[in-house]
Amino acid sequence: MSSASADGTLGPIEIMKRLPHRHPFLLIDRVLRYGNGEAVALKNVTINEAFFAGHFPGAPIFPGVLLGEAMAQTAAFVGEGIEGPAAFLVGIDLKIERPATPGDQLIIKASLIKRLGKLMRVSAVVEVDNDLIAKAELTVSAG
Image (cartoon, rainbow, N blue to C red):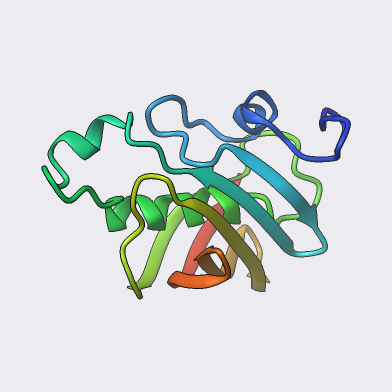
């Protein structure tokens, strides 16, 4: 964690050194920990995000496809020796348990299941206050 903050977490600048995503598509705000085939990230869901204007007026929910993308971005941190662009989403099997809404703080947990060359199979969950929001198995390509 060469450019981690004082508390050992990675903020947006450090995350952007490892992921190609930028605003508005960078969907993790902080990586709380990573290593040993696991990563935990944080996403603060705010009402200011542009997609809430149409998804859905009067009853805003965080789009499910973006939950999957946030999991994929977190999964990029499960690989060993991550120093550059880490991983790209190849496939996802996503199940949403309940919607995420403005004001939620998403905790995204990813664990390496198996690695085969540059491909990684990763299990991920999204929780709010220890309540399961979504779960997925992802295939990501490292590098």
